[in-house]
Image (cartoon, rainbow, N blue to C red; front, side):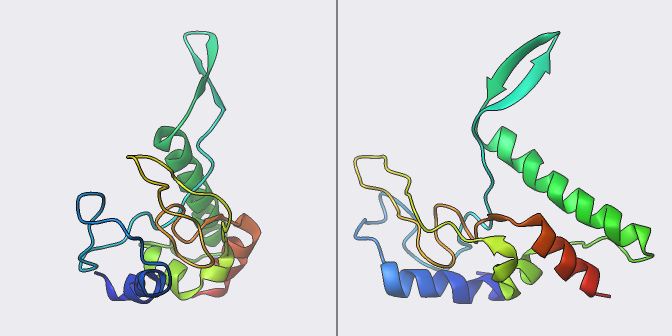
Length: 142
């Protein structure tokens, strides 16, 4: 498990260890916890061949999070700084720049699923992007 992530993931399992066995999730705690972050993944309107439709899931939320990072990179480049590069160590060191999701869960597979909690959890990771906080933090870095 990457060192930048281990403390957050270990805290989750120390305080909220699920009762499920290894048939439901990787119980070893020796690998990376997923996800790192999250974003809304419901009701994105897209146009395909002139027709509008809704899309859902990771294919909607991943480009959304990526666009936030792109805006941060653009702002850094505008003031003569480099792009942010690999963001995970900074996110885990400064989780307050994220919107921590503390309500909800991901029920399924015949279980009540995992529940969101304060801090990192296996449903929403560190949370959703808070663009103003993320921008201010990354602009403060060299």
